Image (cartoon, rainbow, N blue to C red; front, side, top):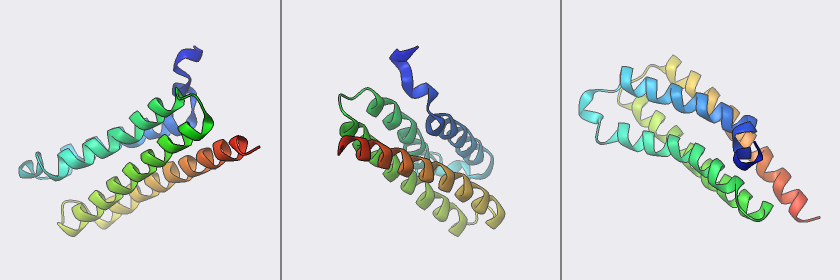
Length: 124
């Protein structure tokens, strides 16, 4: 199924797992009054990671795809900032924060490596 090649990328698969974990976390740990503020913000950002990987995979050049991976990485940074805010507001524990930061670092490393590979192949 070449048409949807993004579905086979490990970074996409791990991003889906991360997205599911973050949404579960916000449902279970964030107060209801945050539903239209911090929860909404983190959901948009975590969804954006996945959506930009998918959208970028269908671009005409590796350079264009790398640009979308950069946007995905920026969205991941936003999720991490939201997790910091959640910790600062005592919505999550330090242990939970660390667990999700580790997952975020894994996805960030994959995005960075994939982006570098695309740019290296583009410059050859």
